[in-house]
Image (cartoon, rainbow, N blue to C red; front, side, top):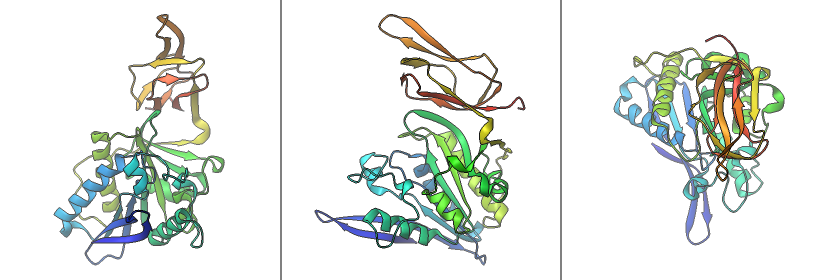
Length: 310
């Protein structure tokens, strides 16, 4: 059942609407929400929503509870391929929990939180931006780690990154929901404005596995779910460019690297020179790598989980 949770008239007979698909079956009162499209240039969640709705509709007899799918929390951003809300120069994931008496954006954020609040689990799906490529991972506030890590381990992602409190913004949807007692997991994956088919299918399988663990899905998941690595924030090394240029690499994220191993090179196309080599300063798991090749001194090149355990 398609439901509208926000509807606002716009100029020139247009309408701003945020909708969800509610699929319900069985005797359980448990409810899981899958939300995405907060940033208009993050598109991995579109395929994941499609697959979950398709599977749930085709095998509704296996659903024991309620699945709610919110594909586009920022529909104007998706329509215009913009990260934020067009014309407002505003990042939607920085205005939660919103304000019922505020601007249109603040009222929208408030309505979203009120509609989702009380769910047994929320999966907030994000892609990376155009500049970085991320292996599928869950990011968790350290204050919610004990509660959320067991759920994150059911999603089949490669990596769980537990941030310290200073790195988690209070105005995000996830923080607002977790603060109300509604558990919310943030998933990061892929790269902006693109859809990685294999990553999306892997997360769909992981969400069904989590639903099965919670008793919301009665199907048998044939895909083996790996246990992710769990990392505390201070065990991550950030690699930044030493010079400006063009970054060239053959390495993809989601691989193990050795201390001193070359990850890529920053080159000068005009002179045909290597300006600097980007080397790993530690043994570990490379979970972020530069996707956009034009770099400047200080640009983030990679993130590595400092670990020797594979």
